[in-house]
Image (tube, rainbow, N blue to C red; front, side, top):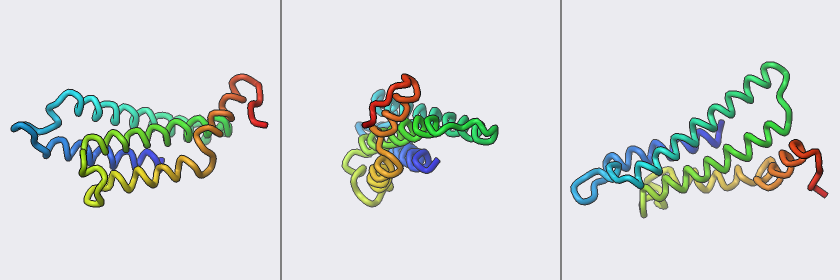
Length: 137
């Protein structure tokens, strides 16, 4: 859930900024590519929340497997990083200043991407689970 919380903050920051920032007499939220980025961010957050919710249900039922946790960690952290990058794009140069939380979350998510197994390690764990073949040597 932590990575999704950071992603949500980035999304809400980008949404608020896009509604307030004006270019050529209109909020930048009016422009198609900005809307596309906002929609992609919200879709990623919602998908990640559903995945985390499903894992919670599996854990409650005593049916959660480590490979499922690897799948979720791999997806949610990668998605949160992409959301932070999209938010940084929406904010333009303001996306890298400390007045907005986006760059801080983006850098923190880079560390989350590394601890408790990198994206690549979780890929190999899930790959072993679905193929029955161990690529980790």
